[in-house]
Image 1: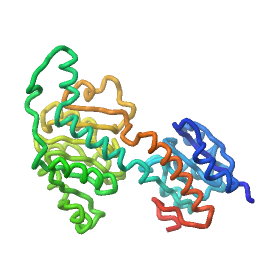
Image 2: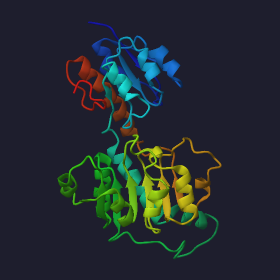
Image 3: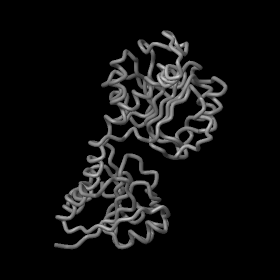
Image 4: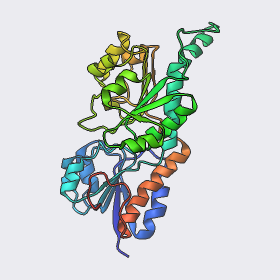
Amino acid sequence: MNAYQVAVTDYGFPDLKQEKAILEPLGFHFVTGQCKTAAEVAALCQDADAVLTQWAPVTAEAIEAFRKCQIIVRYGIGVDNVDLEAAKRKNIPVVNVPDYAVHEVADHTLSLMLGIVRKIPQIVQRVRSGVWEIAPCRPIIGLQDKIIGVAGFGNIAKAVVRRAQAFGLTAIGYDPFVSESVFAGLGVEKVDWQTLLTRSDIISVHMPLTKETRHIFNEEAFRGMKQTSFLVNTSRGGTIDTAALISALQSDEIAGAALDVLEHEPIPPDSPLLQMEQCIVTSHCAWYSENALLRLQEYAALEIKRLFSGETPQHIMNGVGK
């Protein structure tokens, strides 16, 4: 059996038992690192037949140094730490794992939505400080008959819509790459960007980070939203212009925001977002459950196994080998 090398650029898992159980029987041996720079990625991966990466910068510079690589797999959904075009030039498919934590992210999205709309953190803090009010933090809106707008309509957005509909919310959605019939299949009205902004009482963001979506929520977008509306983001922090969001919250252009992802992570301790009652921030943890953790490692390794077993990986992001 041929001996292959898989390089793991970085990881936050307790161990790599899942990956090894799948790939070692195929003849793979592992080299691992906790790479922070493109140069470190290049040095670790130059002789690898396959690359697994979590957060490390797999840049064009790094990819140029790869001599044998046949596949790059990102632990997760977004692939913005991998230069897709550079990999394509070297005929290397870049693969993600979009289906490992759909329910976890959807659950977290709804948790953030309920927390910010019902003002749960503020009320908890008041109770802890000895303030007991049966109608606190007024006004609090009811969810029934309100409109949730989803920006992006992938698997997670669909799971969010199903949950939101159970709370009596009407759903509308924006995604230029999804047909109207797919929206209609879940009882969601497909709308254009401006309509999403103007009609939604809650906007839930489920977009990849691309040139087109970076800072799509900017000053102009916030001006187009209802003053009573809330923004929830569990996708990519860069879709929101942080300075514009801070300004919109400070000037009451929107009612609140709940964020699991930030443009710059971790969030600076002096960020105004952490001082605002109308903003909830969690630590990019929407994906996490113990089950999701194991699925992520397993599904990533299975994509490598597919390629080296003569099959086509399921989730190729840069068009190579499709």
